[in-house]
Image 1 (cartoon, rainbow, N blue to C red):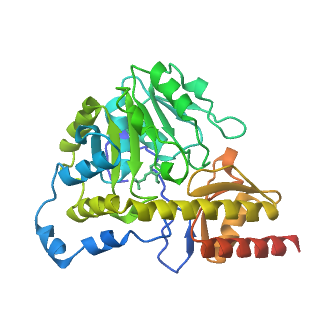
Image 2 (image 1 turned 90 degrees about the vertical axis):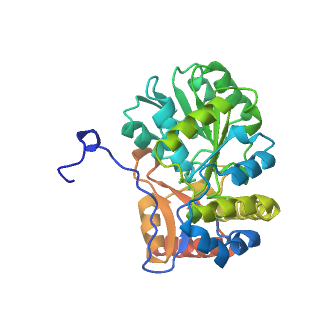
Length: 355
Ligand code: PMP
């Protein structure tokens, strides 16, 4: 730490992203990326001509992209916000909507929520998940705080019913209810259509998962126009050109080729069910997931051992050290071939350990 850092941040514990090792080629199942490339139109969009235009700033209003998102989700452009990854939007939401009343979220969820709370000195109420890792919606009713829930939740993959989310929204009418739908396309039900009905709902999405664009950094949010204006105010007070030209262009193309992504999501869901049944055969308990990852625990080997041994064998998964989940690992669902390698390596590891 330099002697110049504000004392406000001296004790900040930053978010630790999943490993992105560059040393060798891994079967990479640790950061919930898509194993598929972006759709053909997205790849073709990056022409020499577009690259030459990088000398000009991007459209700060992201007009074409917002319009396309609005069209795709049956909303109006005024209900759409876009940013440099959905992390940016979560950041803005904690900055803008939680300082006075605080925030509430589950103990086991996206690890960035407590970091943002800490960053803005937001009083965070943390509610433990139930024994089976589900969210009891009743514990979030009339909370008096900004409610933040990922649906499906990460790293568990468990979903919360739309009717239950609606109850949370209704009983927290004086606070924002932020539903993080980063993984919704893999089998959960979106609450986007409730945006017209409730003025306190903020739905956050991303192109990083189902739309294969994690490296392009593109997140979006849907809400009532007044909430969108608030987010725009923060954006114009921090980084007006927050989305680069190529990403804006690729985002539009991706939405034009939605069928390609729908097909990929169906393949991932199929591979997920295959992986679950194979893992169960070799002693794993897997939490029912509607995301592009699963959360699994072995009957005899520790989570850390499995993670380390798999890494040695060239397969990366995500291990967490928090006491409650240290024997679970989060495994991203990739191609069938990748999942077969994972199973093969796990069988080897179990065999070696049982000797
Ligand atoms: N929300 C959840 C629940 C996530 O797991 C992630 C990915 N780490 C994000 C948001 C952020 O995704 P991105 O910034 O790539 O849009």
